[in-house]
Image 1 (tube, one colour):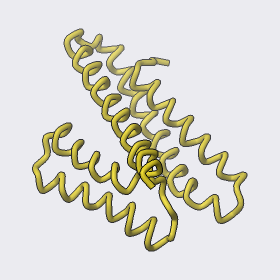
Image 2 (cartoon, one colour):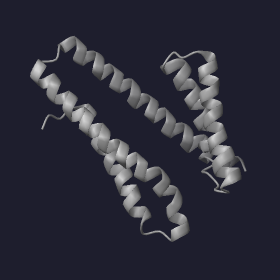
Image 3 (cartoon, rainbow, N blue to C red):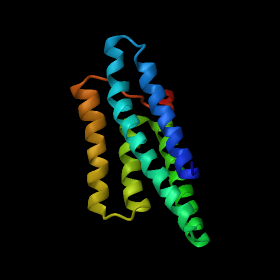
Image 4 (cartoon, rainbow, N blue to C red):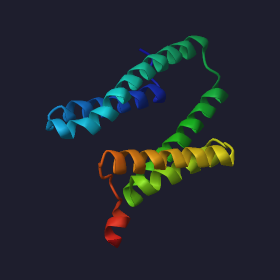
Length: 152
């Protein structure tokens, strides 16, 4: 089985989402809803991604991937790990309602070089989902962030 950083990352995410889904089954019925809404689709997407990654790794191994191309892939992976760390730090510090829209906007605008309109629409969409759907419609309070908790 060909293993590279992409396959390992997908396996790690599969373990996280699969574990989250299995742990949620032990919660009371009302508490199961949110982790399962997120965990089950994410687990299925990780399984699909694992299949794609394994096929790609096998093709690359058979084709003898160019070293320059491999360096470019490692650089892209490092950038994505940095964005993942930024999302984690932002959400821990400022919570979902504040950090998620700002970071989605920043990722789209700076990381993916999308237009200002695309960045604003992406950030606003995430805010509508976080605040409108989870907080207002479903009445599920989201993590507010450590900085916000210290300020209140």
